[in-house]
Length: 190
Image (cartoon, rainbow, N blue to C red; front, side):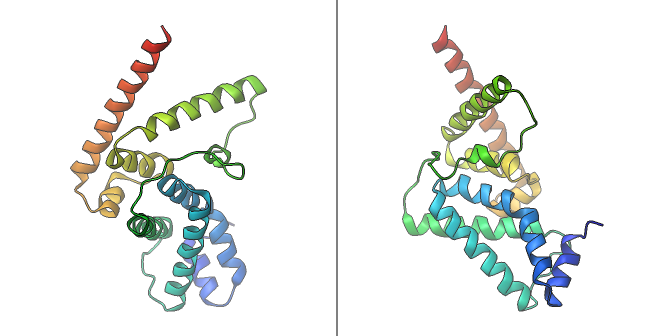
C-alpha cells in the first residue's frame, strides 16, 4: 500500500527514519531538477538540494509543517526561495550546460526505445532545452515550473508572487517566442 506524503511525515515524526527516506526518494528527482534548472550549476544545485532537505527536516521536527497533503509544492517553494537567495548572493546569471557528472536529460524517464529513437528523442530534448535557455528569465522560469516541476499556474503565481494572469501571460509569450525561435532554426536549415 502506497502511503500518502502526510502519512510518511507522521511516521517520520513518530521516529521512522525510513519514512522520511521514502518521502525523499518519492520527490527528489523533481526537486533536484527544478533546482538545477534554476541554478544551472550541478554543485550549487546539490548544495541547495541538501539545504532544502535540512530546512524541511528542521521545520517538521519543530512541528511547523501544516500544508495538508501538499508536501511537494511546499518543498518546491522552499527550493525556489533558496535558488532566489543563491541568485541574489551570486549576482550573476549562469547557463544550463551538461557536465561530466550530470545532465538534466538523465533524470527524464524514457520508455524502452531502440537506439535510433533514443538518439532522436535526446536530440529533440536537447534542442528544446537550448531554445528554453534563450527565453527571457521570467518566461523561462514559468516554463521550468510548469513543465519540469509540474506546478499549476496558481502554484506558480503564488511561488513567484505574481498574479495568475501574469503567469499565464508569461507562458503565452514563452510559447510564442519558442515557436518563433523554432521557425528561425528551420529557416536556417533551408
